[in-house]
Length: 157
Image (cartoon, rainbow, N blue to C red):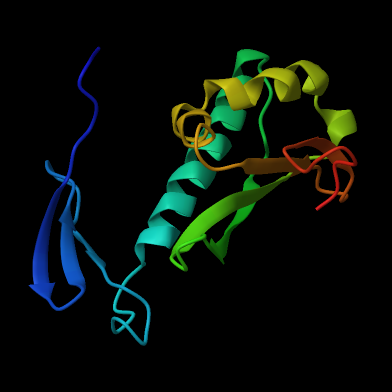
């Protein structure tokens, strides 16, 4: 097993922390949302969703690059679903990620091959899926849905 990236988290006040990524990267203020915290930065749920969305987006760009294709700018929207467990505690019960390519599918050779493999390149989402369902969709710039996984039998959001 190899050691991966790490962070240092320092409490600033109450639920507000400074997240130090080390090196030359700027620190990030994180906080719980109101009414628990003051909302001075992203909350833990947003950080998890951001990690999943960023990794999937980068994996799609990587997979496109393997076939000498470009996303031509993409936009990713992600959201988590939260529910209470049997003990009444809030838990993330799912993450939905929708990626929209800047190009239309017809302009991307081998898009079918790209879409069948890109999710497997994503270290974060593939790891998170072990405990939280992650649904992923990819659409082209014209709004045509090209790919959907994790939405159930009908592949709808």
